[in-house]
Image 1 (cartoon, rainbow, N blue to C red):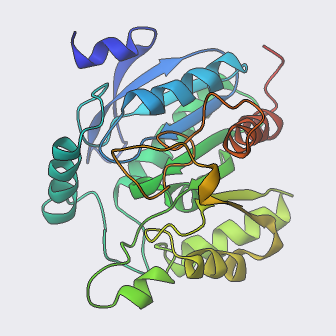
Image 2: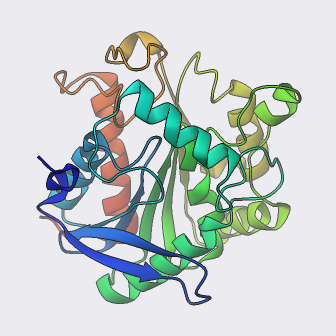
Length: 275
């Protein structure tokens, strides 16, 4: 089976930002206001698509951009390491170590958000980043269309190597982006969700403390007990809140409650109708 068969219920299009810097494939499904689901490492894998399916089923149009990896491919250790090394070492779209600026690909995502809002309507666009892309939804708030940002296990800048402590407490966005996000949260009566498992070394507690200090009470931190995560041999440490470590067979469990909270957040903020 081809990897992209996992996206058979979606319509693909290629999107180029107005500056012409990048063209990336995007998959679209559903009807109603738009939500952009930005995948984690190592790519647009089936558990990310599963979450997107649920967003679409809740009455929204979901957009799935592919920024790295092979769309639809299952997560394996070797595949993950290869994609991560490429993103860290040679990709110009991502600032993996920078503490005070966002990744350049955010400009492409903001342009996609503007297009999605123009086409889908509603009060605005929801956006969730995961892991490597986790902080992108914050920087995307410099695009006025983005009204429902979710930061799921935001892992950049990577808290490892020399300067680990400094990067662990950093947000990975510029002062101007942070100022804009806080101003919009206050002026437009918005909120931002942040998701992490306790004990996740890729998302130290100092990072959420920094987000709370920078954004004020409108940043809502959702921190899960690692014992509530689904076991996953691909990554023993609980990390991926909405995907790999979601305990899908426990509908009343904490991870499923967080998943449903995120989807309800998107519906309320974008003014999605009942499906």
